[in-house]
Image (cartoon, rainbow, N blue to C red; front, side):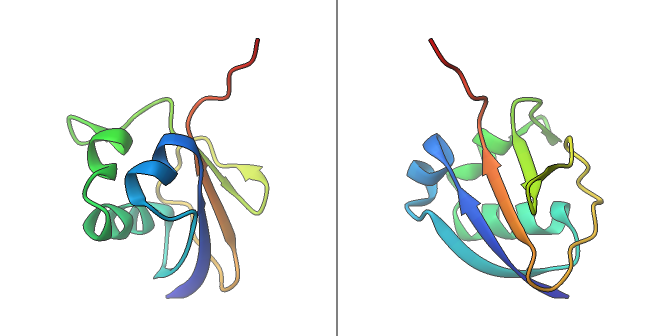
Length: 88
């Protein structure tokens, strides 16, 4: 298992009450499960009917992984999780 830094943004940050956390996980799916276990309010924001919502953006070390929950994590990775970005 790799120790990774997770950065939460916008409503995900508000629901968890933290902007950064370190977690041990082997892949993105298990990381999301750990976050939901620790911060239950994230469950409905991340998932709908057991599937990752399309609007959940996940980047690992600045690379968009496009919802690939099987993406393997390495020691020291930085995972950013954020909702859709909108502008005006």
